[in-house]
Image 1 (cartoon, helix red, strand yellow):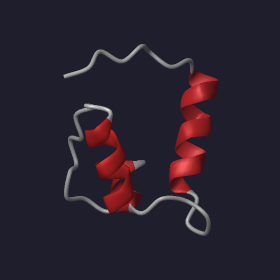
Image 2 (cartoon, rainbow, N blue to C red):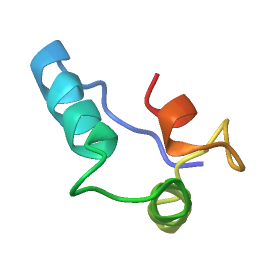
Image 3 (cartoon, one colour):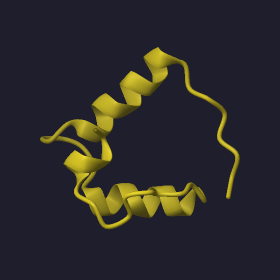
Image 4 (cartoon, rainbow, N blue to C red):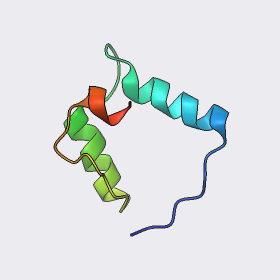
Length: 54
C-alpha cells in the first residue's frame, strides 16, 4: 500500500467537495477505480459515493 502524505484541512475539504459534488463529479465506481490505480486502500470498496465522502 502506498504511503500518503497527510492533507492539511483546507486541502482535504477541497478534495471532499469535488468528490461529493453530485452534478459534476465522479461516480462511486470511478472513485474506487482511481484509488486503486493510485494503490490507495478503499475501505468502502463497494459503497456508494455518498457513504465514501462522509
